[in-house]
Image 1 (cartoon, helix red, strand yellow):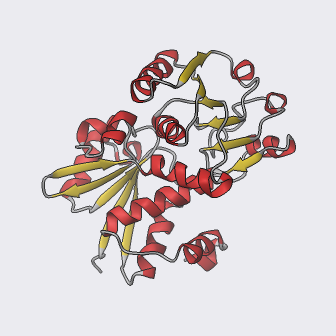
Image 2 (tube, helix red, strand yellow):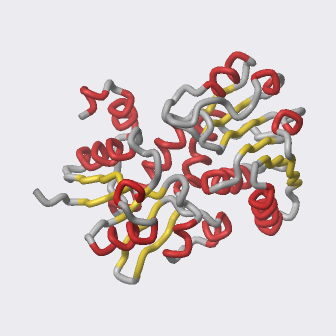
Length: 283
């Protein structure tokens, strides 16, 4: 049976992704049959560009893009929103008659997730570990939330420097520092953000020693599989408010659905409950 909406996700290590279920459930709420495919370049024996072009040729309405392709895809799309152009990373693509259009619902989703947890509370000084695709979206989200002091740590110092320069152009009043040691940079930070894959299924561990979280008010972990990482467990033990990557997953998915579907509405409470239900109950 031909689906009403053909969607896909391009990324590595995505076997545990819940994005297919989110969009199938969103479609079901609207009486639409959604097919949402996992597209792993290595498994398909193709590079990213070939997989992306193939999706366009095969009639996909749109794609989500995840690690490690969120920056790479920018060269293949037109990005209409100047703020997303500044982010320099795309996680949602629509195939339009005029060509593929790039959006970033990680950016908007992070802002929604933060406000859902902390309302209008200021971010305070923030340490962000990881400056790749999701890190760039979260960093610009932090700027939108009013951060004044942002510390960046990445094993690739050049990548952190490039993000710092882009942030300074967008927000000249922002104090941005690049550090080599996360533990040192965490001193005095009210917020700590993990935007690396460390802690996700297939990438065990934690990006920051537990003791370095002492005094932290809030943390965010972009990892959502598993929903409870060692980083979040350690942060709770230190008394910090915890923003799970699951919340970013939820909100970026809701915003992506609005793009894919042309604005079809959702019962958010029902969608959240269905996603959190045991797998056999959610199908």
